[in-house]
Structures are given as C-alpha cells and as structure tokens.
Length: 107
Image (tube, rainbow, N blue to C red; front, top):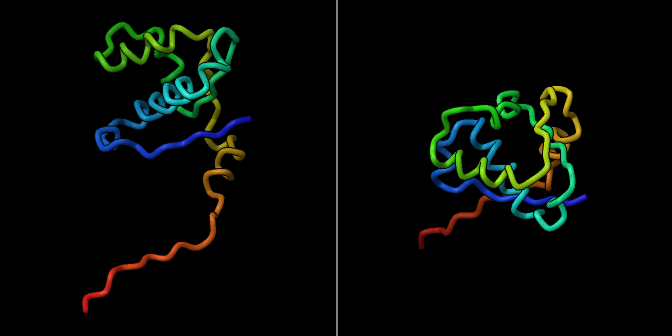
C-alpha cells in the first residue's frame, strides 16, 4: 500500500472536476509506474464519466496526451459510488491536529 499527494498547480485549479480526477490518475500512474506496468489494475473513481474516456472521439490535445499515457497500462476504470467510499472519505477527513496562523507583527 502506498500513498502520494500533491497540491494542484495554478492552472489545474481551473480544471473541471472530471479533469482533476484524470490528473490524479495520471499522477498516480507516473509515480507508481515501476510497480504497475505490465499488470492489470483497476482504477476506482466516483466520476462515472471517466469510465468512457477511452471511447470518446473528440478530445482536446491535453486529454489526448493523458490518454496516450493511459493506453500503456492494462487497466480498467470502474465507477464506485462516492457515498459508498467511506474509507477514502475517512482518510481525507483525518485531522492532523490543530493549525496556528502566525503573522509577523508590525513594530
């Protein structure tokens, strides 16, 4: 079991939720490619539209690049109802303690 995360880049903040979910899949494949290449993997997502990414006829250049990367993997994209995914929700809501905001005082 592994875990990886990163902040969205400035331009990615303007992406649709669908595109950001695809960014997460591409990021994970790039990070874990040494372990995932050559084996079958199931990608579970709570965005049903991602199941059909391989069947879309018209894609913008960015999605075409992502799709080219995805085609190198033996994978299935499966829909998993977001409300049923309590494990991920619990992990995302895990509190890391209190945070304190400190500002420099003016003298």
